[in-house]
Image 1 (tube, rainbow, N blue to C red):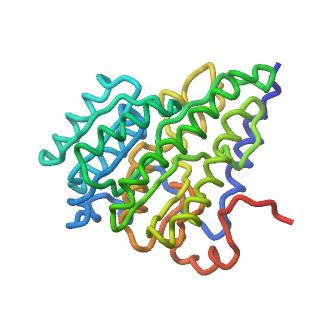
Image 2: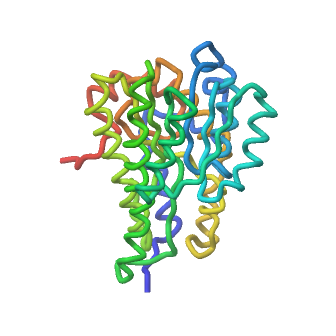
Length: 305
């Protein structure tokens, strides 16, 4: 039997893990990250790749980049037919955007490889990759190791497969960006979530390495981010969470979607490359504390001694 964490204890940890200098928390998009602010010649020439684009946060991200009139938006799902509504909504916002829909199993190397071979026939570069597809499992411990590891196959291996196969096309962009979906769970301990939380710790550290290995030579900008507490299908699965946990899901999909646009296009976001941040944190307050964040090496995965 899984020993769950008391929800009040979890909520307390969730709040105290936010940096003291961030005084403002957001639940939805706000002026500083409004996608319409980033409409430019650059955005109109951009190709955006989003895994898990059929619904929830992924769909919201696709629609946010449609507001910037992206040249190409590539959205994926295991079920290609599920992407049709997202494609229609993108074109309702931006009729000139070329929308490419693909079926991908992100944990299957051959599936991802074939998808990017097809993508390369339609576009000459990718400017922004958003690793949004992810999963979790019912509350459990390592007593079911195969099921436990299955979460890592999607959240860890899937993140690496997408980034790795996207790199040849990212290298052709002047300003390549990778945005990896992490979670506040990477900073918390919640009984029964070891499979999910550890996968997101991996995502954070992997993002640091993307920055170290590709920032200098490719001008790659990469971030791992907590999208907020969104009532997605995954987050509200009664097999995964209990009713008390739902109290934490108070944010709108437009918040992470707009944050992704801001990170991709704002020059002010460059110092956050290689770090874990929350979409809830006010970006102006982050920028105001840039020197502190850099000098103290904040938002990195490390043990405080």
